[in-house]
View (cartoon, rainbow, N blue to C red):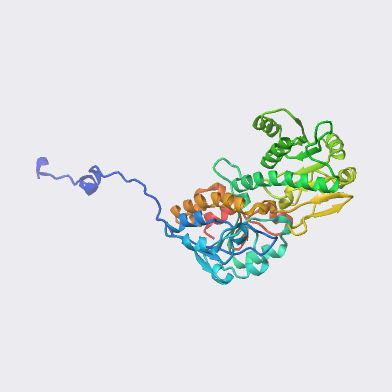
Length: 406
């Protein structure tokens, strides 16, 4: 056969439509997954707040999400069942109906009895008040195989803790106003002082948000303020935010002991990013304080930064040790329940909407490092190493669990 008659085989891949210009593939949003949310009525620690206010419920139900709220859950924050019903929520008259939801949102940790109502795969959003939590809490949570998220450890895109910040603003203001009231009762002393009479001396431990708003309140009332923190940047930022110079110092034990011994009020406001707050003030320092002085440990929800602190309640907010009045309520913002609930809701609502757009809370864990930071229990596995160390429990890295599909 002649060369010009010989046919050369051409692969079909070169003649098919694969080489023809194709339409560009553009990624689309994940299928929106409608959420089923339950909000039980709180029954511990005189908790008056509620996680979602009626306006937030209306926004979420308008997008097709289902929300069930236990009757009178918002009553102590001045939100009625009627308001929630009008916003689109279902009102439940028993906890069992609420605990049928896929996602539970609480402003206090669940009790051991409430944990018994949970089921595998359920998602829990709630604070984690470490001083009130026992080993049984975590063993029960492991047995129920739930996905538990501590809302105070959830971070935003900037790496800050939005729930902690909002509650800290409230706590800082409330702590100083409470200190002024207690000081008047114990010492008969006005926090501000008047012309010719010196003001009270306030020592604040920590340079974060609680400290900032406590300082603003104290200075606004006319008190003399001393602030301690080892983060010099925080001290600089605090002075810049407030717009004036005042006494600041690192946690130098000699200076700290001297200042606390002459203080009328000590505010503990040291926050830990990982677990328990460090002890800054020892019992020996408290013994040197003047009789009738006031100690308010805002850090008590993380164990407290003052050695003599122990949890108190709104019914019995104070106790006396070494002749010093101690006030250590973990949910101090519950005193102003409506304001606190609105702040809480402002943070949770966008997060829930984002989770819905991504297909659910579990799907959001893949894309949100801030949300992952709040997870301490993942389907039967403890994922927070600091909690594991404290309660002698085995912990497993969350990223490993997620990527392995366990």
